[in-house]
Image 1: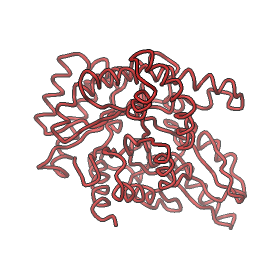
Image 2: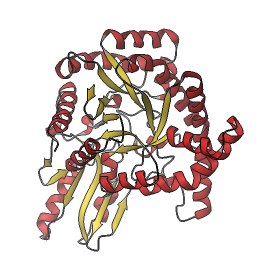
Image 3: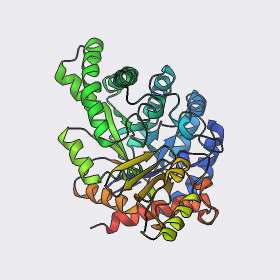
Length: 411
């Protein structure tokens, strides 16, 4: 739905169903009632997530036409897509396999191009909702623990291989722009323990790998000058600002956005999400109590990376909650964990959320807009502790309503 800060919707990775038929049923059961409560008289925006299997099924003309008709009949539109999780994302152990297949593989390229072609087919409906450009978020190239990070040669080979594959998608986006006049962008989503983990790493990769490789590829394929090719890269490759991910890494929104602006890089969309955090008290029993509360969120489906801040201000990274729990010591001052928790809850007993980072990002967006797309992305409802679970549609509605209230009241 259109808001003063841009188009707002929720990511449908919240719904189980890796086949299109199952996912479509979930959308039909959830969206009309949510729209009626939040946007009864205006078009309702959707951030569509499709698994690889679902994308292969939806690309069939009859199914695509049926979905297009449903969107029109229900006054809905797709304004962004999530192309990060390739395979199963619910009721199965995901963990590090969320990155597979990574950007070294043709499967990731084919899947992403297919998503962009589907988005192109859906955009006429979206443009009626005021969309002028659209993007698809994707993985941060690969998973850091699949490489020997201390080996510079292996690191360079990983960046070169993933960037060459990614450029095949960029070339397709240039063709779409030339043929359809539609501006589409691939939004790289830095994540804890991704090959690209931080804002600084995204900027470094763009400047040291994407630009030189991309300039050569676009010149060879389209005869672009260096200036034309650089402009195309900056248009078609952007950053997905997942608020949870940056908060887990203790990255301040204002600083990240300034660095991006200084490097003339764009944000394709904001994924509105909150992480868990806690400051450890000095008293030993109180510290143990905080640790016990983190244990309640230790579940086996998703990665819940932890970044600890120690007494010297150093950041210590752990690949998942179990490793962090085992490694906890007296020097840890604060923990932040990659567990997407409900936006509308600030405190979880002795734990808190990074909700204030969302408010800060929205404030910065209001002061100086840097994207048109805002997508709520809390996908963990099925694995939350029992006392936090509620009916899914109610949860989605409450999150969107919380964001709308923040937008309306932000100073």
